[in-house]
Length: 328
Image (cartoon, rainbow, N blue to C red):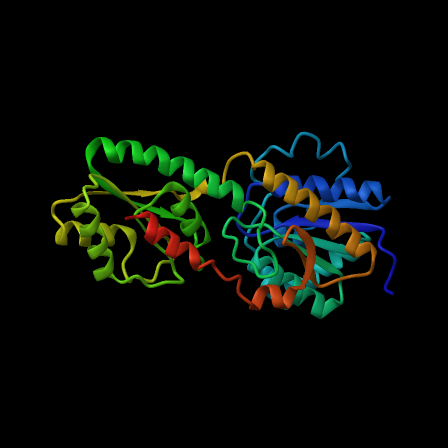
């Protein structure tokens, strides 16, 4: 059994995700419940190096459960990737009498925590917060559900104008290495085709699918493209290629970009963040470290940080089959 935990540091790192504030609130209030001090660290690992700390009482986190983004801010830190930077961060933690860290973020955040733990044996627990849903060891990451709802809502609006003008729209969504948003939002919004990194559809098959849609009497179409799709062209090149080969289509492109990260979190993300935040505090108090908390089959489970980083959360390929059937 290690040193008794009396003060927990909390940071958010990497891309922001709706529900991070709900997780911050849960950690701060769980700390208060268990008579442990909670210290917020601003700007992720950069703030750790700069000593940018503030005690978070339950009142500090009032009225943030409904807010998008993160009140603790987020930043990329190149200095934390150096041994000198991490040594500076460790010194700041010791000077502030912080005994453990809770890290809210994605695989980059967890990699930093794992390296830090390996060097200084400093207790760390990860909470998965990313809209991409690409973390192994959890069915859902904080922010994913909200991002899905945002994308479906926007595609519904794009469909209105697509059908009014008989247009083909390519809609690019986030997901550099994983197509969870594209696949699920595409099925939910009734897209004709979905292009994701995990499945190379091929240009010829895409053209054939669009020809088939035209022959079946469809006057407008939506194609959802994940930004990391492996078809070999970016979304604008793809649109030009289709327009050149299928001149009967009037093609438009809509890149949804950072709007997918913003907005008030859904009820699902608020509840998930609250459950994971409380469990992260309890795990540290039970002496656990170097693990991530996640939700699997509606139960809170733990996964080693190394496994969460190195293994892949597999996409549900059956949804592609469903999409093919629905696009007839």
